[in-house]
Image (cartoon, rainbow, N blue to C red; front, side):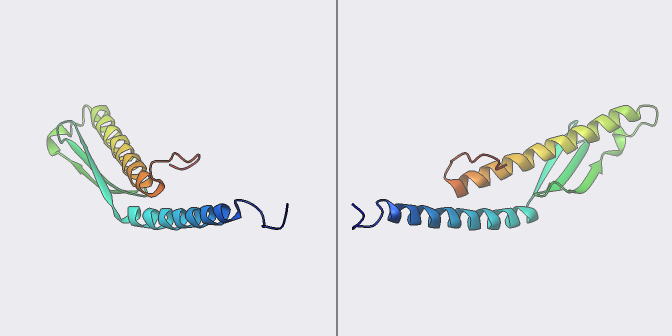
Length: 111
């Protein structure tokens, strides 16, 4: 019964190697994403945000024609919308890159 070793032990070792490779690939991907950027523009180009893969805003461009001191709320809404759109693009970029690493498997707690 125990003479041949534990059945499926080779499968378990192979699986552990695959998991370790996937972890290393995910780490590498996360480091690479830090250097990538996305841009989001709202209001027909009135406000453009550039954000990196760590969701840190790199730049904000505001078309001077939308700066109205009597209506700052509109400008604030445009900036907020642009930041949220850029954040969503970063999430989408991460999900796309993650699916390459995981082969499309959905892993709980991952992005």
